[in-house]
Length: 184
Image (cartoon, rainbow, N blue to C red; front, side, top):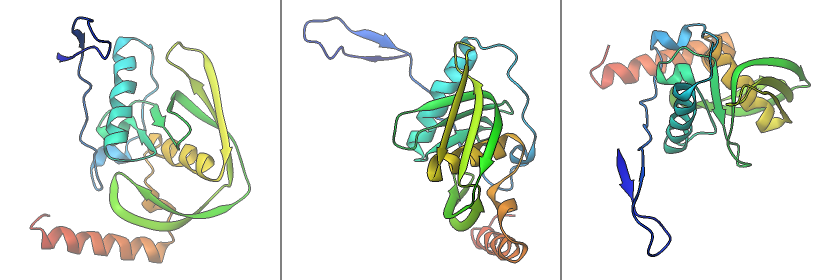
């Protein structure tokens, strides 16, 4: 447990449990290819998971994070595209329309970005921490983040969204860099 002094003068210390910042799993970790399981019960553990995921996402820094990216194969995503944080539990992509190509990266494939074509608008629904159905939708970045994070829940990395030629080149470069670091 961590403590922090109250910001109000004269108030006693308040004890706030420290949030955990999880290591982010990176390619080729097999957990990133697993299909996630639905959350059966929203309880204190799931609430804590969402808080910890947000803390991890901000520390990375990123605009979205899916539970498999921290090694937890559950259908939970958190996002913040600059308009405030939100989360979805057991999300479903309801609709996508249009087309938008944009330079996209992923915390699980660090420091790499590629132009990726996705739908320009997306709408996803899921549950909030109170078990109520919520819907998030948007164009461009919001739509892209929803699609990207829900891909993670299906075991799909952005590498799969690349053309065959670009994917092959990216994988070759990553192997070479890993060998140069003494890995593999």
